[in-house]
Length: 368
Image 1: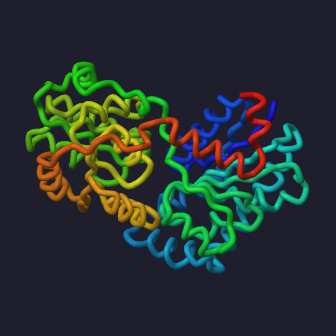
Image 2: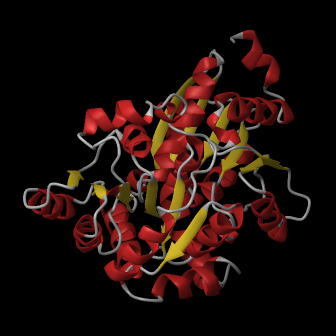
Image 3: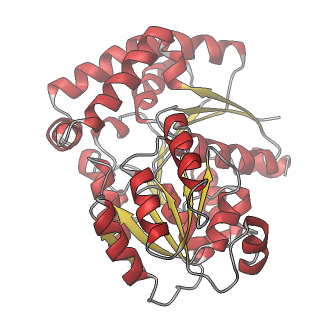
Protein backbone atom coordinates (compact mmCIF):
# COMPACT_ATOMS: atom_id res chain seq x y z
CA UNK A 1 0.00 0.00 0.00
CA UNK A 2 1.30 3.50 -0.77
CA UNK A 3 2.36 5.51 2.27
CA UNK A 4 2.40 9.27 2.99
CA UNK A 5 4.12 11.30 5.69
CA UNK A 6 2.15 14.39 6.76
CA UNK A 7 3.99 17.16 8.59
CA UNK A 8 1.89 19.47 10.74
CA UNK A 9 2.78 22.06 13.38
CA UNK A 10 1.26 22.62 16.81
CA UNK A 11 1.02 26.43 16.66
CA UNK A 12 -2.76 26.69 16.87
CA UNK A 13 -5.05 23.95 15.55
CA UNK A 14 -5.45 24.81 11.88
CA UNK A 15 -2.39 22.90 10.67
CA UNK A 16 -3.59 19.71 12.37
CA UNK A 17 -7.03 20.05 10.76
CA UNK A 18 -5.49 20.34 7.30
CA UNK A 19 -3.17 17.39 7.90
CA UNK A 20 -6.08 15.25 9.08
CA UNK A 21 -8.13 16.20 6.01
CA UNK A 22 -5.30 15.06 3.74
CA UNK A 23 -4.90 11.86 5.76
CA UNK A 24 -8.63 11.09 5.51
CA UNK A 25 -8.60 11.62 1.75
CA UNK A 26 -5.57 9.38 1.33
CA UNK A 27 -7.09 6.67 3.54
CA UNK A 28 -10.16 6.62 1.29
CA UNK A 29 -7.80 5.94 -1.60
CA UNK A 30 -6.11 3.03 0.15
CA UNK A 31 -3.03 4.83 1.48
CA UNK A 32 -1.47 4.52 4.89
CA UNK A 33 -0.34 7.74 6.56
CA UNK A 34 1.66 9.03 9.49
CA UNK A 35 1.32 12.55 10.84
CA UNK A 36 4.13 14.20 12.79
CA UNK A 37 4.38 17.57 14.54
CA UNK A 38 7.27 19.69 13.26
CA UNK A 39 7.34 21.60 16.54
CA UNK A 40 7.82 18.36 18.48
CA UNK A 41 10.56 17.29 16.07
CA UNK A 42 12.49 20.42 17.05
CA UNK A 43 12.95 18.84 20.48
CA UNK A 44 11.54 19.90 23.81
CA UNK A 45 13.74 22.99 24.06
CA UNK A 46 13.33 24.04 20.43
CA UNK A 47 9.57 23.54 20.51
CA UNK A 48 9.13 25.49 23.74
CA UNK A 49 11.28 28.36 22.52
CA UNK A 50 9.49 28.50 19.18
CA UNK A 51 6.03 28.64 20.74
CA UNK A 52 7.10 31.13 23.37
CA UNK A 53 8.60 33.48 20.78
CA UNK A 54 5.50 33.24 18.57
CA UNK A 55 3.13 33.90 21.45
CA UNK A 56 5.24 36.84 22.58
CA UNK A 57 5.19 38.33 19.09
CA UNK A 58 1.39 38.07 19.03
CA UNK A 59 1.10 39.66 22.48
CA UNK A 60 3.11 42.75 21.52
CA UNK A 61 1.06 45.17 19.38
CA UNK A 62 2.61 45.39 15.94
CA UNK A 63 5.48 42.99 16.65
CA UNK A 64 4.31 40.10 14.50
CA UNK A 65 3.07 42.52 11.85
CA UNK A 66 6.62 43.85 11.62
CA UNK A 67 8.19 40.39 11.49
CA UNK A 68 5.69 39.06 8.95
CA UNK A 69 5.60 41.95 6.52
CA UNK A 70 9.23 43.09 6.88
CA UNK A 71 10.98 39.73 7.29
CA UNK A 72 8.88 36.65 6.43
CA UNK A 73 7.23 38.03 3.31
CA UNK A 74 10.39 39.29 1.58
CA UNK A 75 12.48 36.46 3.07
CA UNK A 76 15.10 38.68 4.70
CA UNK A 77 18.27 37.48 6.38
CA UNK A 78 16.69 37.24 9.83
CA UNK A 79 13.85 35.06 8.51
CA UNK A 80 16.27 32.80 6.65
CA UNK A 81 18.47 32.47 9.73
CA UNK A 82 15.47 31.36 11.78
CA UNK A 83 14.55 28.89 9.05
CA UNK A 84 18.12 27.57 8.90
CA UNK A 85 18.18 26.94 12.64
CA UNK A 86 14.91 25.00 12.47
CA UNK A 87 16.00 23.09 9.37
CA UNK A 88 19.21 21.93 11.08
CA UNK A 89 17.10 20.29 13.81
CA UNK A 90 14.39 18.91 11.53
CA UNK A 91 16.48 17.30 8.76
CA UNK A 92 18.04 14.53 10.92
CA UNK A 93 14.69 13.65 12.48
CA UNK A 94 12.89 13.54 9.13
CA UNK A 95 15.70 11.46 7.66
CA UNK A 96 15.22 8.92 10.45
CA UNK A 97 11.45 8.85 9.99
CA UNK A 98 11.68 8.30 6.26
CA UNK A 99 14.34 5.62 6.69
CA UNK A 100 12.08 3.77 9.15
CA UNK A 101 9.07 4.03 6.86
CA UNK A 102 9.71 5.22 3.30
CA UNK A 103 6.97 7.36 1.79
CA UNK A 104 5.84 7.90 -1.77
CA UNK A 105 4.39 11.25 -0.68
CA UNK A 106 5.26 13.92 1.88
CA UNK A 107 2.71 16.67 2.54
CA UNK A 108 3.89 19.75 4.43
CA UNK A 109 1.14 21.84 6.02
CA UNK A 110 3.56 23.85 8.18
CA UNK A 111 5.99 26.35 6.69
CA UNK A 112 8.94 25.33 8.88
CA UNK A 113 8.89 21.83 7.40
CA UNK A 114 9.15 22.71 3.72
CA UNK A 115 12.85 23.57 3.53
CA UNK A 116 13.81 20.54 5.63
CA UNK A 117 11.91 18.16 3.36
CA UNK A 118 13.40 19.69 0.24
CA UNK A 119 16.93 19.41 1.65
CA UNK A 120 16.35 15.65 1.81
CA UNK A 121 14.96 15.39 -1.72
CA UNK A 122 18.23 14.26 -3.40
CA UNK A 123 18.21 11.17 -1.17
CA UNK A 124 14.49 10.54 -1.81
CA UNK A 125 14.24 10.13 -5.58
CA UNK A 126 10.91 8.30 -5.43
CA UNK A 127 9.17 10.71 -3.05
CA UNK A 128 6.79 13.51 -4.08
CA UNK A 129 6.54 16.65 -1.93
CA UNK A 130 3.30 18.63 -1.74
CA UNK A 131 2.78 21.82 0.28
CA UNK A 132 -0.73 22.73 1.47
CA UNK A 133 -1.20 26.32 2.68
CA UNK A 134 -4.60 27.91 3.37
CA UNK A 135 -3.23 31.43 3.98
CA UNK A 136 -4.19 33.92 1.30
CA UNK A 137 -0.57 35.10 0.92
CA UNK A 138 1.96 32.34 1.68
CA UNK A 139 5.18 33.98 2.84
CA UNK A 140 8.69 33.24 1.60
CA UNK A 141 9.39 30.30 3.92
CA UNK A 142 6.42 28.38 2.48
CA UNK A 143 7.81 28.54 -1.05
CA UNK A 144 11.00 26.51 -1.50
CA UNK A 145 12.80 25.06 -4.49
CA UNK A 146 12.17 21.34 -4.73
CA UNK A 147 8.47 21.28 -3.87
CA UNK A 148 6.59 19.41 -6.59
CA UNK A 149 3.19 21.07 -6.19
CA UNK A 150 1.72 23.83 -4.03
CA UNK A 151 -1.92 23.46 -2.96
CA UNK A 152 -3.60 26.77 -2.11
CA UNK A 153 -7.21 27.83 -1.65
CA UNK A 154 -7.43 31.00 -3.75
CA UNK A 155 -6.05 32.56 -6.91
CA UNK A 156 -4.55 35.30 -4.74
CA UNK A 157 -2.51 32.67 -2.91
CA UNK A 158 -1.39 31.17 -6.22
CA UNK A 159 -0.04 34.59 -7.21
CA UNK A 160 1.78 34.81 -3.88
CA UNK A 161 3.52 31.51 -4.55
CA UNK A 162 4.56 32.62 -8.01
CA UNK A 163 6.05 35.78 -6.53
CA UNK A 164 8.93 33.61 -5.31
CA UNK A 165 8.85 30.82 -7.92
CA UNK A 166 7.34 32.15 -11.17
CA UNK A 167 7.32 28.70 -12.76
CA UNK A 168 5.97 26.86 -9.70
CA UNK A 169 3.28 24.22 -10.14
CA UNK A 170 0.26 25.47 -8.19
CA UNK A 171 -3.23 24.00 -7.76
CA UNK A 172 -6.17 25.95 -6.33
CA UNK A 173 -8.37 23.63 -4.25
CA UNK A 174 -11.31 24.06 -1.91
CA UNK A 175 -10.34 24.36 1.75
CA UNK A 176 -10.93 20.95 3.33
CA UNK A 177 -13.26 20.84 6.33
CA UNK A 178 -13.55 18.61 9.35
CA UNK A 179 -16.07 15.79 8.67
CA UNK A 180 -18.79 17.22 10.90
CA UNK A 181 -19.11 20.30 8.70
CA UNK A 182 -20.14 18.24 5.68
CA UNK A 183 -23.22 16.92 7.53
CA UNK A 184 -24.05 19.42 10.31
CA UNK A 185 -27.24 19.17 12.37
CA UNK A 186 -30.19 21.37 11.51
CA UNK A 187 -30.66 24.65 13.31
CA UNK A 188 -33.60 23.46 15.44
CA UNK A 189 -31.87 20.22 16.37
CA UNK A 190 -28.67 22.05 17.34
CA UNK A 191 -30.53 24.61 19.43
CA UNK A 192 -32.50 21.96 21.26
CA UNK A 193 -29.25 20.13 22.05
CA UNK A 194 -27.60 23.31 23.36
CA UNK A 195 -30.52 24.80 25.25
CA UNK A 196 -30.94 27.84 22.98
CA UNK A 197 -34.58 28.94 22.41
CA UNK A 198 -35.79 28.43 18.86
CA UNK A 199 -36.70 32.11 18.29
CA UNK A 200 -33.74 33.73 20.07
CA UNK A 201 -30.88 35.54 18.40
CA UNK A 202 -27.67 33.54 18.85
CA UNK A 203 -23.99 34.33 18.36
CA UNK A 204 -21.04 31.92 18.29
CA UNK A 205 -17.91 33.60 19.69
CA UNK A 206 -14.51 31.97 19.27
CA UNK A 207 -10.97 33.03 18.39
CA UNK A 208 -8.77 30.11 17.55
CA UNK A 209 -7.30 27.42 19.76
CA UNK A 210 -5.58 30.05 21.91
CA UNK A 211 -8.65 32.21 22.48
CA UNK A 212 -7.04 35.43 21.24
CA UNK A 213 -8.50 38.79 22.24
CA UNK A 214 -10.79 39.86 25.11
CA UNK A 215 -13.17 36.94 24.64
CA UNK A 216 -14.53 36.78 28.19
CA UNK A 217 -15.41 40.48 28.38
CA UNK A 218 -16.87 40.33 24.88
CA UNK A 219 -18.99 37.27 25.71
CA UNK A 220 -20.43 39.01 28.76
CA UNK A 221 -21.17 42.22 26.84
CA UNK A 222 -22.87 40.33 24.00
CA UNK A 223 -25.05 38.31 26.38
CA UNK A 224 -26.05 41.46 28.27
CA UNK A 225 -27.08 43.03 24.94
CA UNK A 226 -29.70 40.30 24.39
CA UNK A 227 -28.44 37.44 22.17
CA UNK A 228 -27.58 34.00 23.42
CA UNK A 229 -23.80 33.61 23.21
CA UNK A 230 -21.99 30.32 22.59
CA UNK A 231 -18.48 31.22 23.77
CA UNK A 232 -15.59 28.82 23.01
CA UNK A 233 -12.25 29.09 24.83
CA UNK A 234 -10.38 26.54 22.72
CA UNK A 235 -7.35 25.19 24.58
CA UNK A 236 -7.10 28.30 26.77
CA UNK A 237 -7.83 26.86 30.23
CA UNK A 238 -7.77 30.23 31.99
CA UNK A 239 -10.27 31.66 29.51
CA UNK A 240 -12.49 28.59 29.87
CA UNK A 241 -12.61 29.05 33.64
CA UNK A 242 -13.56 32.72 33.25
CA UNK A 243 -16.30 31.90 30.74
CA UNK A 244 -17.79 29.19 32.95
CA UNK A 245 -17.79 31.55 35.91
CA UNK A 246 -19.62 34.19 33.85
CA UNK A 247 -22.10 31.62 32.52
CA UNK A 248 -23.18 30.74 36.07
CA UNK A 249 -24.40 34.32 36.47
CA UNK A 250 -25.68 34.97 32.93
CA UNK A 251 -28.19 32.40 31.57
CA UNK A 252 -27.77 33.57 27.97
CA UNK A 253 -24.04 32.77 28.06
CA UNK A 254 -23.09 29.17 27.22
CA UNK A 255 -19.40 28.36 27.88
CA UNK A 256 -17.26 25.73 26.15
CA UNK A 257 -13.62 24.75 26.30
CA UNK A 258 -11.88 22.68 23.66
CA UNK A 259 -14.78 20.90 21.96
CA UNK A 260 -15.61 18.81 18.91
CA UNK A 261 -19.15 20.25 18.84
CA UNK A 262 -18.29 23.27 16.67
CA UNK A 263 -20.52 22.07 13.76
CA UNK A 264 -23.52 22.05 16.12
CA UNK A 265 -22.53 25.39 17.65
CA UNK A 266 -22.35 26.98 14.21
CA UNK A 267 -25.62 25.40 13.15
CA UNK A 268 -27.31 26.87 16.24
CA UNK A 269 -25.89 30.37 15.69
CA UNK A 270 -27.13 33.18 13.47
CA UNK A 271 -23.70 34.83 13.39
CA UNK A 272 -20.12 33.58 13.87
CA UNK A 273 -17.79 36.08 15.54
CA UNK A 274 -14.24 34.82 15.10
CA UNK A 275 -10.70 35.65 14.06
CA UNK A 276 -9.59 35.10 10.48
CA UNK A 277 -8.58 31.52 9.72
CA UNK A 278 -9.93 28.14 8.69
CA UNK A 279 -12.99 28.61 10.93
CA UNK A 280 -14.24 31.03 8.28
CA UNK A 281 -14.44 28.27 5.65
CA UNK A 282 -16.35 26.13 8.12
CA UNK A 283 -18.87 28.89 8.86
CA UNK A 284 -19.37 29.56 5.15
CA UNK A 285 -20.02 25.85 4.51
CA UNK A 286 -22.85 25.91 7.06
CA UNK A 287 -24.19 29.20 5.66
CA UNK A 288 -23.46 31.65 8.46
CA UNK A 289 -22.43 35.29 8.33
CA UNK A 290 -19.05 36.24 9.75
CA UNK A 291 -18.00 39.08 12.01
CA UNK A 292 -14.22 39.08 11.97
CA UNK A 293 -12.17 40.09 14.99
CA UNK A 294 -9.07 42.00 13.94
CA UNK A 295 -6.80 40.24 16.45
CA UNK A 296 -4.41 38.09 14.38
CA UNK A 297 -1.43 40.06 13.13
CA UNK A 298 0.62 39.38 10.02
CA UNK A 299 -0.93 36.70 7.82
CA UNK A 300 -4.15 37.11 9.80
CA UNK A 301 -4.65 40.60 8.41
CA UNK A 302 -4.24 39.32 4.85
CA UNK A 303 -6.70 36.50 5.52
CA UNK A 304 -9.18 38.95 7.04
CA UNK A 305 -9.14 41.20 3.98
CA UNK A 306 -9.70 38.20 1.72
CA UNK A 307 -12.71 37.06 3.79
CA UNK A 308 -14.24 40.51 3.44
CA UNK A 309 -13.75 40.33 -0.31
CA UNK A 310 -15.55 36.97 -0.41
CA UNK A 311 -18.63 38.66 1.08
CA UNK A 312 -21.16 37.89 3.84
CA UNK A 313 -18.63 39.17 6.37
CA UNK A 314 -17.93 42.28 8.41
CA UNK A 315 -14.95 43.33 10.52
CA UNK A 316 -14.69 44.80 13.99
CA UNK A 317 -12.03 45.99 16.39
CA UNK A 318 -11.64 43.67 19.36
CA UNK A 319 -13.06 45.97 22.05
CA UNK A 320 -16.27 44.53 23.55
CA UNK A 321 -18.31 47.67 22.80
CA UNK A 322 -17.28 47.62 19.14
CA UNK A 323 -18.01 43.90 18.84
CA UNK A 324 -21.49 44.29 20.35
CA UNK A 325 -22.36 47.21 18.06
CA UNK A 326 -21.22 45.36 14.94
CA UNK A 327 -22.74 42.04 15.99
CA UNK A 328 -26.18 43.52 16.60
CA UNK A 329 -26.06 45.14 13.16
CA UNK A 330 -24.88 41.92 11.49
CA UNK A 331 -27.68 39.92 13.13
CA UNK A 332 -30.14 41.99 11.11
CA UNK A 333 -28.65 40.92 7.78
CA UNK A 334 -29.79 37.81 5.87
CA UNK A 335 -27.93 34.52 6.12
CA UNK A 336 -25.92 33.45 3.08
CA UNK A 337 -26.41 30.10 1.38
CA UNK A 338 -23.90 27.34 2.18
CA UNK A 339 -20.70 27.71 0.17
CA UNK A 340 -19.61 25.32 -2.57
CA UNK A 341 -17.11 23.90 -0.08
CA UNK A 342 -20.02 22.34 1.83
CA UNK A 343 -19.92 19.54 -0.77
CA UNK A 344 -17.08 17.15 0.22
CA UNK A 345 -16.73 16.16 -3.40
CA UNK A 346 -15.28 19.59 -4.22
CA UNK A 347 -12.24 19.07 -1.98
CA UNK A 348 -11.91 15.40 -2.97
CA UNK A 349 -11.94 16.23 -6.66
CA UNK A 350 -9.29 18.92 -6.23
CA UNK A 351 -7.07 16.68 -4.14
CA UNK A 352 -7.42 13.80 -6.62
CA UNK A 353 -6.44 16.10 -9.49
CA UNK A 354 -3.44 17.29 -7.48
CA UNK A 355 -2.28 13.71 -6.95
CA UNK A 356 -2.70 13.05 -10.66
CA UNK A 357 -0.54 16.06 -11.54
CA UNK A 358 2.37 14.58 -9.59
CA UNK A 359 1.94 11.09 -11.02
CA UNK A 360 0.26 9.39 -8.05
CA UNK A 361 -3.09 8.60 -9.69
CA UNK A 362 -2.28 4.99 -10.62
CA UNK A 363 -1.15 3.96 -7.16
CA UNK A 364 -4.09 5.74 -5.55
CA UNK A 365 -6.65 4.24 -7.93
CA UNK A 366 -5.30 0.72 -7.62
CA UNK A 367 -6.06 0.82 -3.90
CA UNK A 368 -9.22 2.97 -4.10
